[in-house]
Image 1 (tube, one colour):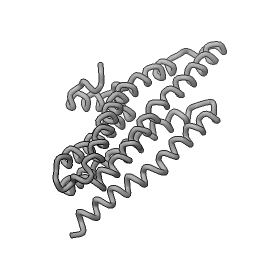
Image 2: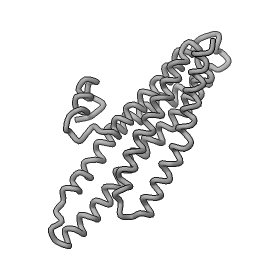
Image 3: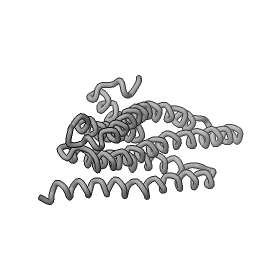
Length: 211
């Protein structure tokens, strides 16, 4: 079952069910894709307008990047589900003998590391999305500025949600040095891009509330 081929209704029903996937990581990727798509909409509402002729080339370049980024995030919805399967299998391995316990520990460690990779990539793509949205908010049509603010909020939420899917796995890793390195990379993305998304949102709010 390919997650992005499901209807919205079916995806949400699966999300609400006991099924292990989709889960938080896949949902983060989908929300990030929605945020990037909203930014892209701002761009498409800007191009071709005489008022924005000076930034036409910039907006078109942003649109090309946004289109590619949205597709990458869409693919990560499925990638997150695929990464969870080996982890679930590892948890189910027997550990009745020392040999079995050692084998389970090794397989689990590898699966935990792999399970961190997708949400980290989702975070990186959401960070790219926030950077794009900054430009859309600054250069795009004022008639769509609220959508730029929404895009920033969605990309921020997806970034933060994906981080939790890193931390839940690094918490269980036996290799604490590796876990610390992954945590540090995650914290760096959060520290920079949550603030940048908040700045876009605050700027849009200011434009809308101050007449």
